[in-house]
Length: 565
Image 1 (tube, one colour):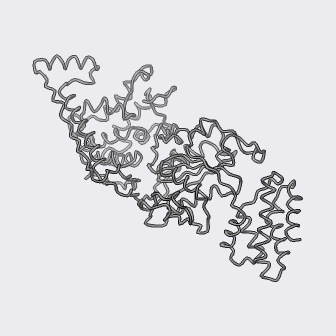
Image 2 (cartoon, one colour; image 1 turned 120 degrees about the vertical axis):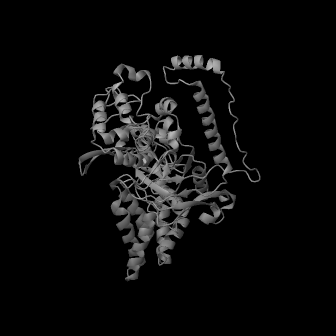
């Protein structure tokens, strides 16, 4: 048996509702006379499918018992589950209460106040005053009749306690308000009149206030008294189209110098960072490239942003390794990362989600198919916004609350709110710093971003191409069989090419990927007896010249001719 309060506190909204729905329908199946009466009242209610939406109203494509429960608050679901499994004079007519909730509201009254059954606010401030809070401690059996989905739970570490300073328990004193019995009756009448009948007993109001104070104090004490421990990530299984499975894991704090092993990093990496240890391979952790070379200053700045939960904007020319920089940080720390590439075809529903139709046993049903943003922000992941300076204004607007670290409101999913995971982070990569392209090299795709959007980023850094010597050292790690003359030819080509690119003589960039590929081509043809000059010429033509813009080809051919002359 499990207390209802445990389900409310330890499960996210979707999973808690699924548990309560299983219990409710095991006692009162959908299609029963009680449910049919509620459904009929909902179909004609001002609270369902209104012409003007309100916080108390909900939209339902097909009004049904299941959709009514889905749109209700988590606490209302819990109360119904309690009421039908704990029959009593107060709770025996719960379906009559629901019927009355839908039929008693007039359209012109909706904007004046908050109505149940769809909002937690009304439930806590109105209904619990009448029914009390003891129902939360009621025990129910979550395994009744039907299987329950595996819950997604991420337990974050509590605030650490300073060494040697134990937390001070907080035990609030009772309000100690003594009510004169002779005047209590009059006070109750005044309160009832002033609140429209919502509150009728001053003594109970004082008691509820004391209980609320104690609950707040208990939560504060629990938060500060528990010693800091690694965060534990509970494994999830795929239970819908929106939930991808991840293994169990935990956070381990390590020194950044130890994690990245960068030589000569000095004090710029001498601080502790989160690393993630998973019990099984995690498909969302990028593949490790042991040969990747970090710029120490850019690495330090990025780690600072991740540790302090600052949005990071990484700019640089095409092919400098901006996205690779972010992905290899995630690979070494073990943090999950999801990447979204922005282009002209990117729509809001790709990011946020949309309502889809799924065929089921009882016909077609609608469900909300979450986009990559809500899926990612509910997990301890990095969201990599690639080519962020190509984002359209309407897409940027949809990301505003997420960039501010606030919950995401899914208006398409009946106003559901997605709260970001404590370790959710955002990194954007772009060719510019958001103010447009003054060089003309990226004018076809880059858009000027609003200052309001750019101001939501706090850490900015620029990543440049590796110096040719370092780039060739990286190439040799990937292609150790490259001959000395082949290395010399490749070094000369890359050096002259980059000079021409920075001088805007060439508009087609090349990256270390090009250099590694050319090294492989040179090595292959040398191994079958081709002279190194001819092998180099073939590598430059096959990998760079043939793929370059027509306006650049003559210049590139001129550089290549000098290399093999």
